[in-house]
Length: 300
Image 1 (cartoon, rainbow, N blue to C red):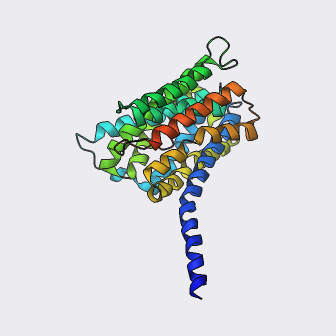
Image 2: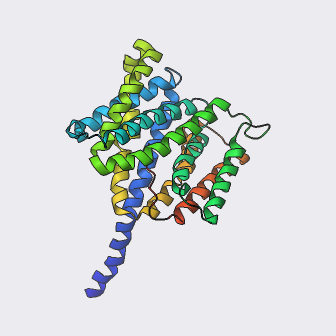
């Protein structure tokens, strides 16, 4: 009897360890499924309009769940919160602009250089210069320069880079705002981003934005890209070491490439796949050798 109980303990311990990993992978899968749905909607309305739908529905869901109006703003706390909200809206807008021009896996890999830069920005260790050089080499391979990156739209690449820069701001100022306001930071920041992006989307699409054939997929995008992955991600973050969480997040560009191939029939060249692998390896390496004071990246 005692031996049976002892044999079940390692199994339970293994399941306990795998559960948050499964949650995080599921969150990434939801996010990429949402991005794939958004990509198909670009045929009907503009990327700005799709971003507006996602942010509008996502903000409604977050506001009902988290009640951001209970936040008490002070002279010192409003500025990080405002920058966080603006960067969140701009990040989503630029990401969708990139998705409309370049493959999902490539757009995600380029944007992922934002959190990577945050991880190594404050370090001067030789190993971090190596990770920077590796990521930069991957970006150069993806850049539409000469024959490298053939078929990539330069505007799409620039939008993905801009989205990565906004992601970096989102991490830095989200951490600062979250220290003061806790989980409601996400809802309040989303509310700020909605005030900025929703009017842009409505101007871009007009009455078509309110069409039932558009609102349905828009709601699905908000659920897949916001309502489902955020709580899954936060649950995983509370149960995983920060270093493990960061390493697992680094596989997101690979998952994006997989979803792009499976759902959107986007095939990457060997050179593009190599470039994405270099960025992923740089991210994993940077997180694995990360100093504990660096902020962790989360999905946008």
